[in-house]
Image 1: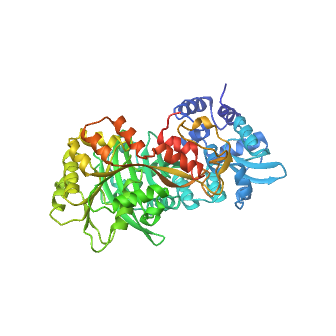
Image 2 (image 1 turned 90 degrees about the vertical axis):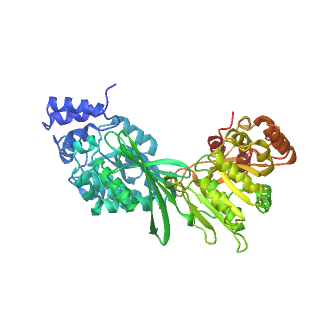
Image 3 (image 1 turned 45 degrees about the vertical axis):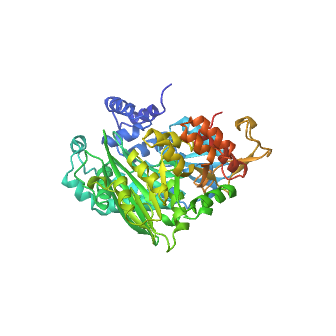
Length: 570
């Protein structure tokens, strides 16, 4: 089946704007960029202008042309019309809803010859479609005004496509830093783009910004509530200046592109001081950059706000108030382990306690606590910092991560000699943490006599309260051991308040294993993880899946979300 793009080519041939040879070359180039428009290829090659294409289509198809009548696109945002065609769809397919009269919706298209797209828009909106032709530049600008959200960023992105290409292909291919790139990084458009990018990420509650180079473009993605969302990227010509600008802010070596680098900066945004942790990684297409956004004001360091159910909260609070012993929080990166530990420190931090932490990096700055930044490059690792801590008369110690045998042994010995020790570990669940500690070289009898609590944790997205949708679930999707009687649950739907994701914010689910005397015996006997798990469940341990299902029944999250996060078996 022929692509609808060929119809555009036929029209341009008939108008005498291109030759058969021009069209053949453009078709070959278009095949190398799936999803691209042949009109874009012809414009980029300089054969025709966007205005030429639009005017030719207007004459041949006898439809209104926004180039001839700019007032067609000067419309105020209309929420009712915007709901008919989502912003993501409009951006992807280069179209803009303009007005509705009765059951007729006027839509501006960059390529009105695409009959499949025309039919899809008709089905999506439930309206008859009246076509208007506009340039891609005008449609991008119109989308920024019409949908409103992030308009300033979108305008900056759109402007980047109109800017001349100042970075040579040779410089890109050889991955050499030119003086032009450094100078461009200090220009107003690049500074504005970096500023707007950061502001939009904070506005959308993103925890990370990913800037990823690709063969002929680059991608920008925000991690919002634990899930990556791609935004329309600027012109490829902005990639090197944007990365260089952020490297300059982060005090990195902008000439070094062959090795990973780490840096940081902070900025005051809307009267909030935001910390940014920046990391670069060399890839085959250029440097990938990730900015971790650390906004303490957005994270409540209160135990009651972390998602514990009443029984779990009572247990956790009872354990952390013990005078000595070790508490471990386990889970993958980004599961909220550090936040949970700092919420405990926030409660325990009193003038009569000496609290010391060593982290890499220090994510939360808390008054009254002595915090140390680990620096492996100068030999200040967790183990060395811990040895120094024991000469500082501590009451409470927090170790960012237990990575090796030496760190684990010092933590455990500190717990055995009258100190309360908090740390994190990378394991899938609470019971497997025991075998992990033994595997890295800690004697089982030391583990059993020092551990107070091991708690696995995950973050799940909360359903948007404004648009969550009630439905009757399939009981077979719950594990057999989980008893439930409620007939109605809730699932994600999507609205303007949650950016059409159906979710707004996150909460935590927990698997809490309190070390009982029987568990101490099993650990000392080097019992298997399966036996330890069985005994922990007898003692009342609730699994991550069950903790998640409880929140599903309460209408806090969805069954799909809990399954996604916990990878529960069908």
